[in-house]
Image (cartoon, rainbow, N blue to C red; front, side, top):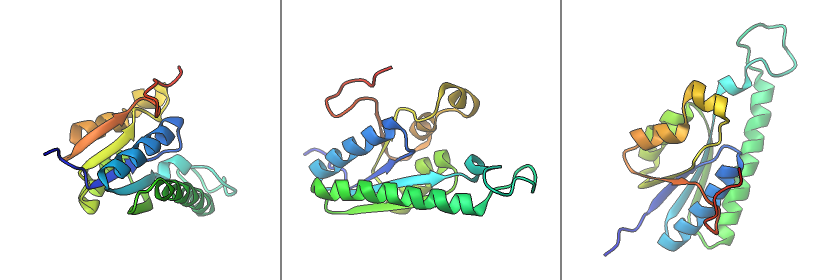
Length: 162
């Protein structure tokens, strides 16, 4: 008998690759009659020095900017939830977290949701970001305690255009 995944965690970051990953995660969840958990993780470092009050100094994070970004992310994951439900996925959970994407996707969230599969896009970062901080996908593959599926192709299994 083949193992059936029961709880699939998919991380989204707004990249084209993460949109492809959600599409494939929806298909896998539907095929496995699994719960789909769609998450995004916001890092305060992404918003340092952005906003109206730039005279506060280095390291300032504008709460209004963070709140607006969170609302946009909640709207995005809600759209993904609707897409999954329209495709026949019965259980869909969405959430927007503040944290550290690598650690949260590899360890914290899989444990919290008892995920048995993590699906991520091959990369959402650009070349410089990958060199400076390493790939989130690479970290998750190396550190997750459950299966990890890295998505590199679209629904027709075509590699993304370079």
